[in-house]
Image 1: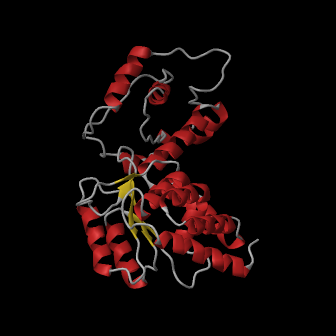
Image 2 (image 1 turned 60 degrees about the vertical axis):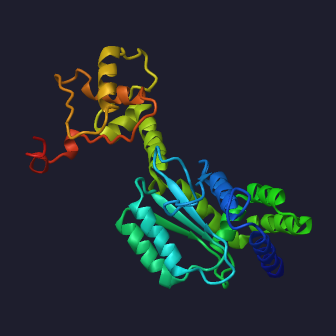
Image 3 (image 1 turned 180 degrees about the vertical axis):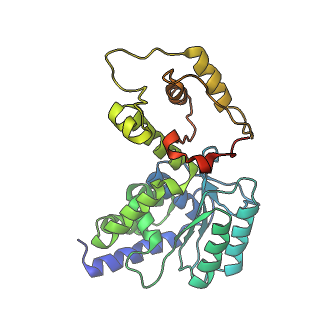
Length: 307
C-alpha cells in the first residue's frame, strides 16, 4: 500500500514523463497510448499516417470491429472545437470504430464530454475518456498506464532522453500499479477493454466461447437450445460428418451479405440443427452466430415475418 505522499509523488513523476514526450508519432504520446492499449487489450493498435486521420491517431484492425483512439498531449485547456471536429470525422468515416478512446494529459470538461458522448452514441460509437482530472487520486490516463506498467515503462525508457526522469517514471508506475486506489480502476479498465460491448472482435470471441461451451456438453446444450446439440461433446460413438452438406452450407453462410433467407429443411430427427452447428464450428474464422429455438418464437410474432 502506497503512502499518500508516495502516491502523490508517483502521479507527479508520471505526468512529468508524459509531458516530456513528443505529442505525436510512434516515439511520442500517440505511440505510448498505442502501446498501453495494445498491452491491456491483447489487440495490436497501429498508428494512423499523418494527414487527415478521420478522427483517430491509431486503431485496431477494422476486420472484426475497430477500437480507435485519439491522443492529446496538452498542459492547458483542451480545445473543445478540435475534439468535436474529430467526432464529426469519425461519424463520417467509411468505417467508423465501435469504440473511441480519447487520451489526454489534462481534464476533459463535462461541457465537452456531454456533447461528445451524445453525438457519438447517436451514431453507434462508444466513447471512453482517459484524461487527468487535477483532483482525482486515480486519473484514468494514469490508471491505463499503470495497467500496462511494464510496457509503459519500457516505452518511456526508449523514448525519453532524461535518464533520471525515466527512472522516476518507472518507479512511479510500480507504485501506482500496487496502490489500493488503483486496484479497482485498473480491473475496471481491463474489463471494459474485454467487454463484448467494446467492439465486434470482443463480441465474436465471447460468442465463440459461449457456443463452444454449449456444443461440448449435452446437458448444457439441452438447457440452452432445448435439444442436445453437441457436435464437440465426447461420445461413445462419434457423429457421422456430412462433408458435402457442410461445405454447401458454409459457402452460403460465408457469402456476401444479402436479404435472402437460407432454410435448412428435413424431417424431424434428421440433424438439421446439428448440421448448422457443425458447419459453424468448421468455419475459419467463425462469424457471430445466434441460435434461436422454435420454442422461443411465438406464432403471432413470427407469422408473416419471412416472405
